[in-house]
Each structure stands twice: as structure tokens, then as C-alpha cells.
Length: 510
Image 1 (tube, helix red, strand yellow):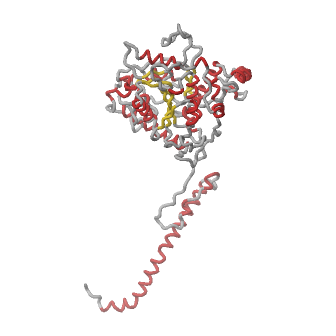
Image 2 (cartoon, one colour):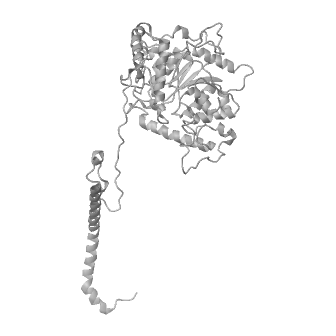
Image 3 (cartoon, helix red, strand yellow):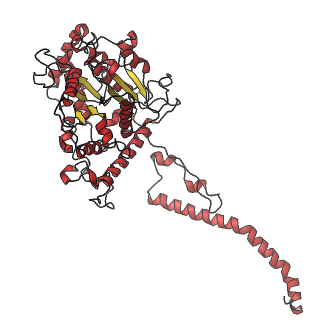
């Protein structure tokens, strides 16, 4: 290393201490000066934004603290502190009440109308009816009660509790306002069986659980129904049902007609069959082995479009899937105020929240409202003494169904009933009702994307395009994925009727 020339030593001796002091002052003052300049710039930008917006913000925005103001003294380059912004409060539905006071007070099932009593002794065949349940206890109670009142043996009804609450309902740990609430005691009082799933299942997984249950219990055939179905034995049916011996019995219940249909399908010289629809799959008869033969339900399609995929694969597998009536089946989203009306109990009136007959008089959507209202009022005294009449029950059920179908502005509007219980905070396995519905919607969209990629087409109208079962996952998309995802556009939403009786025709397998 070269030595410093002797002639420079006096310079360093004279100015060295001064240079050292200058560098020390620079490093001490650099950070505060930079911070002050940055703060001034931020304040000027905020002032300019406020003037451009012509005044200070009003409403909820005024209450939100400014991230820049909160972080003005933070070190330069530090991440901004996260500020939580809450969604608007969800719509609140009225708290649930007791929709079956007779059952609550008596602690036992009401008598079934004499004309609807199930056969005694029991028919030779096993006739299990499976009802899946996830949310909305009153709607499930109404569905189960309607089948019992229509003549289905209560001991043959199996409610599959799919709440994912690990036995909390069985232990009585959930309250009525909890969306997952299920009253095991009430179901046992009605004589109904309850089976609990090991965890929360999607629709497709639940259907496979039905098949698993049928295997374990050795049921070759079983019936299943949606919990938002409301059924009646048709007392006015004409003598035209090929599945019933009208010469010896002029009236057949929904149960008797359904059993007659099962015997007919399993008769000699019948083609192999997989499904019999009574009102699309609101009420359905299943041939277990046919479903297993084609691989069961595709659980990658958890909700909507799972039915299209399943029934089309059964069709391609060579299985017949006919449809005919066994009784009256309605698609509803509200319960009767008093479910005892289904059993014709005196004093139990068939009425429901939102009945258009009782809307204000200036409602022009019902030109015959005055006559209907007068008839409703005239029946009150009769029902108090004798119980409900069949025709009136059917009229009310039709209005319930019309209300549901009229409120289908969005793809999932028909299932808003699933989110009407908003309580249960702090209880075991609590789920936010709105968040649960949002999660199901996301999974539904994902399932439609899977279906679209699986078959190369957006929608259930695969047969008219010539698509076959062997084409699964082999076809190029018939749309530009950059323009639209698989869950939107195409035939989604346009090829299905809200009328279940027309759904098979739209699917193309009727």
C-alpha cells in the first residue's frame, strides 16, 4: 500500500475532523428529512383528491380511516396496515316457530287418514324412502309428514342427516334457529329412522351415500325424495293407472301406486331400467345396481349438472328411465304454518307465509283474489271442526309452488330456503348461513365447469349434439375459454324448465 505523501498530512490534519463531522451530521439528518418530504407529498396528493371530488366524502366512506394518514410516521418501505371492511348486514328472516304444535304437545304421531293407511301386513318388498337433509328443519318435517299422511309407512322412511355436525343434533346441542338443527326426537315420535353421514357431503356425494346405504342394507331398489317436496295421494285420480288393480280397490294411495310401478318395472319382458321419475327427481325410484354399473355419481360435479351427468350416463349405458305419476308432488320452499293440516286435524289450517291470496287488495297480479279470499274465510269454521279438505290442501300447495317458481330470477334462487335460519352462533360446528350458501354457489359454478370440460359443451343438451358416453374427457371445447368460462353461456339456464314434469324432455331421454 502506498504511503500518503508528506505534503498532504497538513491538509488532513487541518480538515479531517471537519469532514468527519459533516458526514456524521448527514447520516443523522437524512431519515427525518426524507420522511418529512414524503409526508408533505402525501398530504398534497390527498388534498388534490379531495378537491377533485368536490368535497369530503359522505356516508360510510367518511368513517373509514385513511391508510396514508395512519402510516405517515411508519418507516419508509414498511407494508401498509390491513384495514377490515365489513359487508352490509344480511337480510334477516323472522325467527322460526313451532310448525307442528300437535306433535310437540302430544309427543306422538297423529293418526293417518283412514283412506291413506299403509297396507297391513307390510308388502313383501322392501320399500325404503330416503330423504336427505342439510338445512331447514321445518321444510324437512313437512316433507316427511306429507309422505306419512299420504300413506307411506313411517318405519320405511329414512332421513339422512347430512349436516356435518358429528352427532350434535342427536345430543340436543343445536337450537331451532341454527340452520343445521334437526329434531331427532320429533322424527322418532313420527316413527321415522335417522341415519347420520360421517361428514358434510355435497349433493353428488350424498347420492353415492344413498347407494352405499342400499348396499349395506341389501336394498336392490329404493325411493328417494328432495326435502322440499310436498306430496299427496290423489283422491281424484281417474281409473287409468295401469299399475293398480282398480277392479278390487277403487282408490290407491301414493305408496300403493309407487309399489305397483316397481312391480311393473321388474315384471317379465321388461327392458333393463335404472330410474323411474314421478316428478323428475323430486320423487324417484332407483335401481341400485344400474347406478353402480355405470360408476355412480361423479363427485367432481358436486351440485347442479350432477343430475344431467348421471342420467345421461345411465341412458348411454342402455338403461330405461321412464316417468309417470304416483300421486301429487309439489316443489315448495316454505312450510305450512301448521303441518298438522296434512293429517286433517281439526283446527289445523293450511296456510303459509307469503300466500298471495292475503296480499293487499291493490295487487293487480291476481284478478280473482277477492273470490279466493272470501272462500278462504268461509272455510275457517269447517276446518276448526272437521279439519282440512283434500281439495283445499291441493289449492294451497299449488300456490306454494307458484310462489317458489315465481321467485327464480337467478340460477340458484329456487334454493333460497336453505339460508333462512340465521342463528346458532357459538354452538358446535356453527357455520355462517350466508357464507355457507356462498360456498355452495362457488362449488356449483366449479361443477358446471367440470361438466363442460368433461363433455366439451356448456349445458345438458348433449344428446341432440350427438355426444356419447365414450366421449367423456375426449372432446375439445366448443367455445372459446378466453371469452367465457365453462359455467356461463352456452346452453346453461336455457334448456331446463321449472316444471319438473318437463325436465326429462329437456334432457332428451324421455
